Length: 289
Image 1: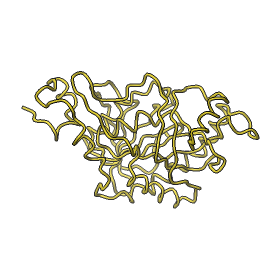
Image 2: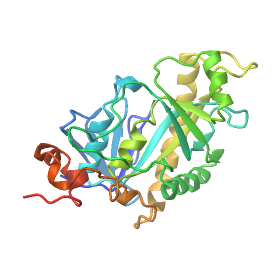
Image 3: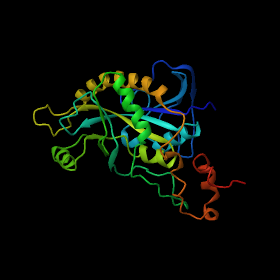
Image 4: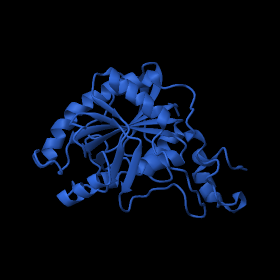
């Protein structure tokens, strides 16, 4: 299987990357099922990039239906070391206007019922998640976004809700009282599963609206969001093209060793089936015979 060290997970409206050459399409199966769509691997700015549309081409999959474990596992098995995640989001503060870009550095998880770990079934693992987004890759995205001329905000807290509905006014006001900056439905459990897979993960969050807290703005509707998403997609494509050549060869962030002190189960007590299924994640820490 062709390898790519950089992965891109496309959000709402972003179903392909322009400029890819030497394209190959991979229909992958994982122990967790099928990814959202076949993974497209191609060359962009001299580097091999794997692209996966989170919601599937044609936007068929709701946020809570995304098989995130299969998506991250498949990218890991292809050699991906860094994931650029494109996330549509609502703004929770005046300073972040629709069509602005945010590179968040913190997250609050308010999702419900989503499979949020690769582990269990006889294997206990607890990863550190104090810094949920890779600082090194986040810096790359910030510099790339500035090159496009877009207004970009470095840092911020992303609250991830279950969806698929938008917030009530009471919920929106509650989230604002927590000091969050943006709201979305897709960064979790992607971020934590990427950490469990020892993949650097950073979000290119594109603001679509002011949620429903803003008293002088019209109440957010799906049509309003879609129109802004279409504008944001072009910004995302330009940012990705600028970001790829800026990605350094060395990983100086610690993401690549997230499991080094996280595996709690005695090695000789880990079930063989679990070891085999999770070999792409655990291979460097366990003996296989």
